[in-house]
Length: 70
Image (cartoon, rainbow, N blue to C red; front, side):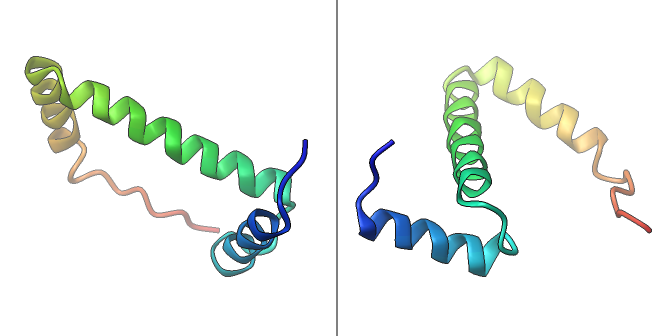
């Protein structure tokens, strides 16, 4: 894959500042996942009934403890 130096450096900056220094491949994987998630949410929001159901399911989870403990 060919990537311009500017894009490579931008990806490396995101990696260093937000992702803890993972490989650039993993950083790109995160960004692709985030993009696909936004696209999916956009499709969901375009369907008022599906969006209402999604929000209702989210409201049910509002009290769930999702903290990670080691």
